[in-house]
Amino acid sequence: MLANLLIETAGGRIVAVTPDVAAPPVAATVLRGITLPGLANTHSHAFHRALRGRTQAGRGTFWSWRDQMYRIADRLTPESYFALARAVYAEMALAGITCVGEFHYLHHGPGGSPYADPNAMGAALVTAAAEAGVRITLLDTCYLTGGIDRALEGPQLRFGDGDADGWAQRVSFLDLPEHARMGAAIHSVRAVPPDQMGPVVDWAAHRAAPLHVHLSEQRAENAACLAAYRRTPSALLAEAGALGPLATAVHATHLTGDDIALLGASAAAVCMCPTTERDLADGIGPARRLADAGCPITLGSDSQAVIDLFEEARAVELDERLRTEQRGHWPAGDLLRAATSAGHAALGWPEAGWLAQGALADFVTVALDTPRLAGTRRATAAESVVFAATAADVRHLVVGGREVVRDGIHLLVGDVAAAYETALEEVLPE
Ligand SMILES: [Zn+2]
Image (cartoon, rainbow, N blue to C red):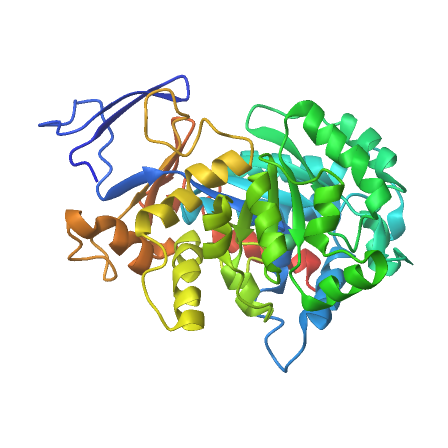
């Protein structure tokens, strides 16, 4: 941890980083606290934010939660999704997130009827990110079946493109501005049959774009995959060529030893979403074993039950403690790398997530004069941030050299709670 750091930016990039500066230059903005590279939220479904706090009464399962999620999905239009996502991404900015990976499959209108612009929903997300001042990787998701050997039905109809070639054709019409990049996603082995994975894999490989996939989040998914294909989801994806250094497996909760070896050998990243996995009673993924096998670990807010990457980061360690009854699996520095450079790399922004000359000028300042972090000392500052900070301790955010959050206020959106109230009025059923 360096002290009295001067970060100089020009043209959206960091041009110099100088430690131990005696006094800041007159024109400098003073960022009091700990300044980290911007955080990367590697796995987001923006619209799930509408479910926050509304799925907790009674017991329910992952699958009953999914039914509630579908009811929200059914109501969204490009206009209402823009308003909701703008608030979600603004909340992310307030939490220190400078780049989001949006795993996007709400492609068409209700019932699958196409909008005049076949990418109207994705474009709404890209514009929402611009208005919230954050970068976005639009992980446009191929979603073809409602389950193995089951057609899409009801609310799922708007996710589909017919087949993978239809997906590739639609995606080819997307033209993204500077703050946005493209990635591809295979929703899961439930939603894309193996003979349809090829075009998505080829599309991503051809562009050296990220390729993300939900992997083995639920035991039922593994059982159905084994019954249909006599392979685990990891093995099926490996055979389809979907695993490699540009791939990210999301969740990777229920894996065999062979699955872990396959993923590690491919150097695919793994995105852990501990607050969502907790919320949905998914289980605890083998993050330590995956990292030891060769997988970079990244973090995602996924269902937006919580938007706080500090909480996600410490959960990777704390969940492992609960499982093993032992402490000390993850140094704080490794968890910060998961939240910053590893996450950005998995989203196709390898030049972000660093405080170094030439990197994108994306950084976040965590205040130390808060009840949670008062008393932080430099020697253990990384541990304090990872194990004690919350999103509420984020004070400043800079993206591409531009201030987005100052003194805890979102400079572009203003009152984010009010933005949510307006947006949610449109999409909540009552
Ligand atoms: Zn997800």
